[in-house]
Each structure stands twice: as structure tokens, then as C-alpha cells.
Image (cartoon, rainbow, N blue to C red; front, side, top):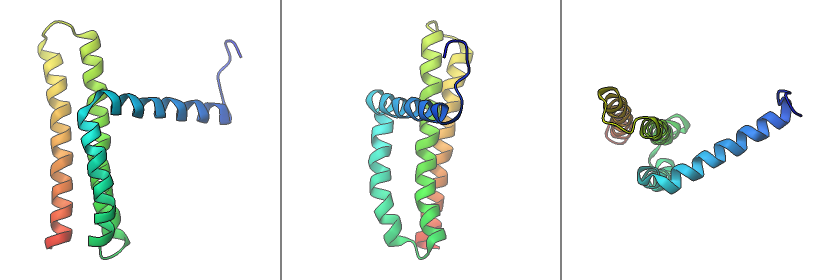
Length: 120
């Protein structure tokens, strides 16, 4: 298939392989991903117990998964900055700080959702 675009089911399968490889790399190299995986595994059964209906359960689980998703994006940003920015540069630091801020906002969202559902 030289010089031809991969289409259809082959493209989907390749995308799945790339995604799986990304998850494995994140789990291997990022402690925060490992910790958030544990948090998700604990949160899912707890959400099922605490949530009063499907919407609450979805919000509880979804808010924790959002933290995981943002952490994946932050880890990717950090890897790119580290790869191309060997020297200390203001923009490199800013990119990492903004990625970290995004994770913090996602964590605050999860805390808010859990607090409102449990105590509200």
C-alpha cells in the first residue's frame, strides 16, 4: 500500500493500536497516570454505590475520567516540550504550567461534582 492512504477498517484498527500504545507509554512513564488509574478503579464502584440514578453515576465517573483525560494531554504536552526544548525557555515553562493548571481545574471539577452529589 505504498503511497496510498489507509482507509476504512484498517485505519480504525491502526488508530486503536496507536491509542493502546499511548496508554501503555503513559502508564509506564507517568506516575500521575498510574495514580489516576487507581483513582478511577476506586471511583467506579464507589460512584455506583453513592449515585442515586444513572445521571449521578455518570457524572461521578465522568468527572474522574476527565481528570485522567486532561492528565494524558498534559503528559503529551510535557513530552513534546522536553523533546524540543532542551534549554530553559519562558514558553516551555508556560506550556507546562498551563497544562498543569488544566489538570488542577479538572481535579477541582471532580471534587465539586462529587461534593455536590454526596452532600448536596
